[in-house]
Length: 322
Image 1 (cartoon, rainbow, N blue to C red):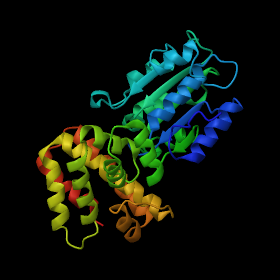
Image 2: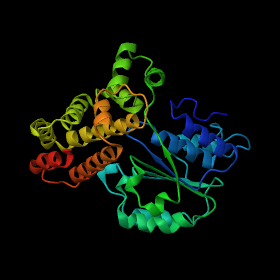
Image 3: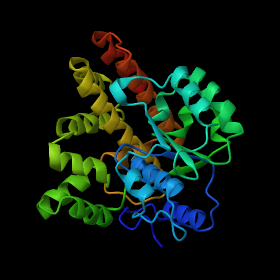
């Protein structure tokens, strides 16, 4: 049984999860990392549904009472904490609540699942508080964390979890997936969106449905190109655009992160159609690409924390210089 037949690409991750579910050997703690739009939450919710499914055969069956409640996000044994909600950080209080609740028996299912989405925003104090239940969890509890990069988490947490890395699909798979999601869209528009997003299905769907990311994507690509220029004037001009609007800055930085992540893949030998990522992969080491990704993460954190945006452009330019 392939529980992920409609989930494009990432075959190794899907195979691993299918094998673990078939053998009832799923890890008690799973970290799913990847850029926005790669399907982290989709995978997380399938795992949570598996945890509460009451079928005696292949799980999740998708049709039992527990599965139907899980699909509707209304199952009492699936708890969700989302770090993106209202741009709030995941604090110690929310983690302590999870820690206390984890030792209470499930309401309806045999197991409980805790989804901690966008856990990049988990404060270090909260991570330390979480570690106490993470090290010795109850047998009937599964923790599922999603983040852009697991490096945002403490090593003590990473070492106690199975880390699954998701990547954008190849062009053909991405086009087929977007066609299934948006059957009314023109094939040429889908292909253009997929190419512009480097195979990132979620972002391609966002562009086609909301027009989202067009200007942000262009600015992110300009910044990516400017990083490699010998003089910093162009990079400074591009960075200055981020100072006008916090929402625009955050979306642009998210897309820049995706370009850098794609460059890491190319650097490791993967094929890609992302024309913005290829020069970065050719000119920069993997270590430097990871450093730049960390800088972009820090920049997004500063934007969320209401840094003085008049000074942000100059700071960001100096941090991204190679």
